[in-house]
Picture 1 (cartoon, rainbow, N blue to C red):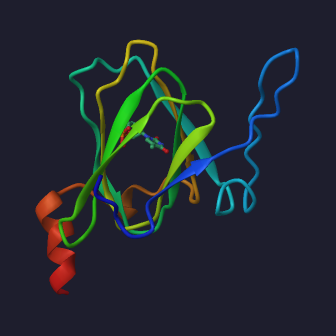
Picture 2 (picture 1 turned 180 degrees about the vertical axis):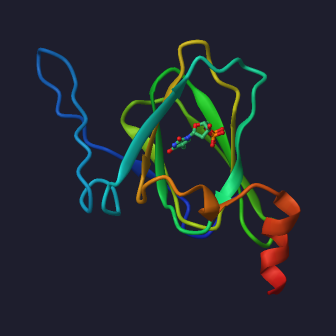
Amino acid sequence: MNSINNVKIIEFSPKGDSRGQMVVLEGNKDIPFDIKRVFYIYGSDQDVVRGQHANRESEFVLVNVAGKSKVKVIDVKGNEAVYSLDKPYVGVYIPSMIWKNMYDFSEDSVLLVIASTNYIPDEYIRDLDVFLGEDNL
Ligand code: TYD
């Protein structure tokens, strides 16, 4: 599989006992930034492609806490990689200035997204050509 600089899989350590599993995500510890925002995506059909943007500021960790999805990441040079998310104890860290498409959602997919910023619509780049054009600036 291709890899992209600084995008990385993070495996969390479930705290399991006879009652079941728990994953704890603390900012600047399990998650490599201060956590400012959490949202989750569910109920997306399999043929839906979400995301389709890059962020100038925000860093993210994505975890499929239930079900499965895939995320395709593209860097500013056009290098691509695909990560399959299908375990509640595995996340993918995505730094700023990486394009991301989330797709192939299973019916039971709940995709948890942890972000380093509050929601600022202006920091989103929603045009892939504009994003790839940033390489020449
Ligand atoms: P959108 O960016 O289209 O989601 P995705 O990247 O998963 O495809 O966001 C969907 C809607 O939710 C849109 O109206 C903007 C709003 N929104 C917020 O208000 N706050 C947020 O933090 C996010 C991510 C989205």
